[in-house]
Image (cartoon, rainbow, N blue to C red; front, side, top):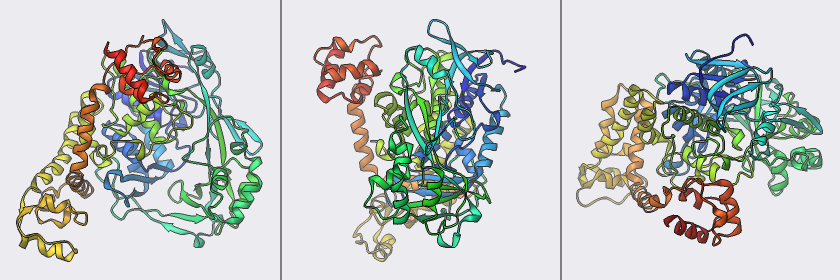
Length: 624
């Protein structure tokens, strides 16, 4: 390497989704950054499914966007199909998802990193850190080159001692075709950090021309798609269809007969796999009563001849994979571009981190992404952004960027990671967020834009733009206080089979009826005043106004709950607090709390193994 960057503020290891957001976040806050990656061409690569968002994940992409992140913009610019999921449920858990062109997405992100001033991309492998008094001062590459920095963010993905499994075949790699990283885990363990092993899988990629598409079912996106980013102005994505097929008894029998040859299933892989994204082997075994399972055939890019088989994650031998898929209608003559495989890798249980994602024992060292035991692009990107921002905050001696569980899905994600046992790859769901009514995808800008601006993550211009959108919603809610007479509204109510009114009442009261939506009401012509704005944002703001009214009682109840627990939640626990000396605590609580070392009483109450009785004892001790 001819040039070693100097005067680096924040150095990020890894060019995946976490590394990208970490590097860009630190840069937006005025830091000179360095991204170290084993392959410059792989920066931004979507190593698994060709999609962004999904249930709960879509909410996080929106939050990342409000905080100035690139993921939502990249998805909007590369999207092939957009869809709001969970429409059969309440609007508070609706979640956006996009099928994307992996090549365009990667190129967009790569250009963003390479064209940003004060960011240097270095090709190399970090094997150890340089420390002074348990504070990071630099890194050492495999070729013995040293790069000095004030903070390091590790976002190593599945590369730490990565091992790929395809049946009995084993390949040392970080992902197919790319070498793994060796030595860094051992160095971190020598510093006192605890590591573990996890596993994940990926499905086979099929050759499109070998599929009989006439036997598949077409799955299209929304006719009126919604973008992820508040910065997206021109938005007219193509609605490229995906296709669905179903497995059958013959396919299941072929898989079942070769279960002992699947390292993910047989135990040959020591790491724990994702329970909520099981392999096809796990599905066949655990749900033996099911006669079929849905598979989604997803194009990896526009006019792609390479098809991602969503729902068929596997580590079976290649011949077994092929035989099982050929038993499925439409895949009788299917051929592979690449078989499915499992990958086993090192991670570091994130209870060793503060809520800022800085390690508790080493100053200036932050972890983000799969190194923390998470699964998914969105979870990784969210952590990367927070870690990069907090690396910058540490350098500037500012308070860290933190999110409450009632404030953002990102807050739920990080709080779960630093307080709960990571026994399997963590995936975000709406059910994990107890205040999900408060943290909707449609109000992400209202929740987070001010904090993002104060942190320096977004410009004043963008903050005012987002705030302007939410003025539409707020003005609409105020307009709903207008009274409606029986003559105004009864014809509509009768047409919808609703009980008519006998005297004047506010439009707000009418809107609270389940079958009424905001566009039924004559007072809501306010939206016509904003014809110069993109229609999708106007529609979203009108929906947000409707949610505010319909969920008013639930929202007030949540806010009262929050008020009651806030004192407990924020009560600080000294770092030096010795749990082992509190004899009234259960043995398990003492052990878990000593390892996790929660920062607040609220965190302590959520540590696995801490009972209500333990919580009461701890509260009494802290009050003394």
